[in-house]
Length: 426
Image 1: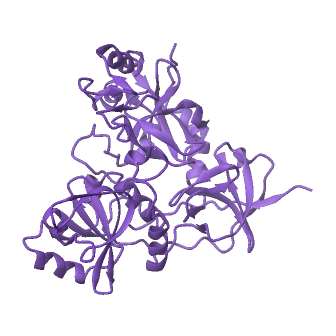
Image 2: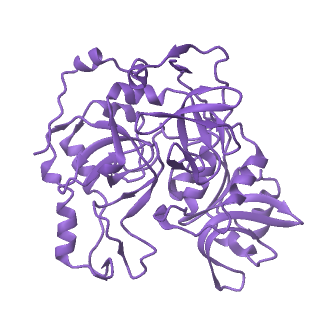
Image 3: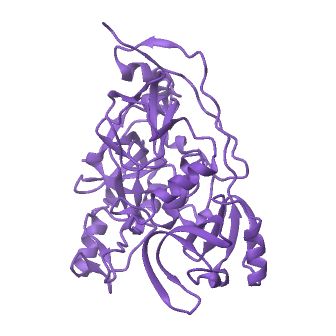
């Protein structure tokens, strides 16, 4: 008996109430690794050799004083990893391929698996960020050894393992992004042999009272019983849910760039807010540019804590140079903060090693003087999630990818009209 599943053809248009997001330009330099484009979908068509070479070569590491794994990095090491970027192999016009990540994986500055560090291998200078499973990627280039793709995502660009990407047609790629979806609200949630974490988005094919059917990154689909590890669509902002998710991360290791699958300060904040449909930037430096500003560098302790007393818990972010903290309101007359942090200076001027996701009470733990290092306090405005259509179309699926392709933003005929051809690497 042939199965019928539900496919809802819908493009969700959200109103970002004063909040920058993944389709909004943020950042000073077009070639910053944290710059993200006004319309990422323009890369469905082409990018010039000049622009791509600038993107690939803009960020640099110095080999002098660095370690390459467990030994000193040599100039030859450095030249070899730079050469693997294959910049000379970029054609004059590049027509990107598109696809989705098959699992959660690391994004790198250079196409190498070897850690580059300055003496502490926990801080890999080659680690950009962690990319979630089923993340859409625009494949712009391939490394000389053919093991890495240079890709652009909605919030970051860099090198990822080619074997961890499933390539789709451009039409199917656009169609998948228009589908309804679920948001994961817990870590280590396995759906169809793929592990997801807080904030991850998984395209949904059907839903009834007891179960859902979701697409998997390889193009197949799987059914899963409904449970409290995910919600349909973006969650409507709820302070209790935010607190629950924030506290579920407590005591997880601090993880620079997410290399080991955990989080640093900005990833912690970003992933929590993704649950509510707010795709804020990845770095703390850009996160401070979004939302409603409550206070710039405070002039006094009194001014800072007067703002906190009236601030909204969990929606208020405290920014330092290179660090972000989420304010959690008051408990027993004390100010509570949540953050993924390596070290924190206390009121006695001593550096306290924390190295985990922590919940701190400022008075009790003698961190009151953090106000002296705050450079901005801002408030994030949550989104209001739209409801899915109540009477969606029931269609019979015999080839799921064919059906998904039907709802692509661009038809094959329209694509052919641009007369673009992909220039293959030798």
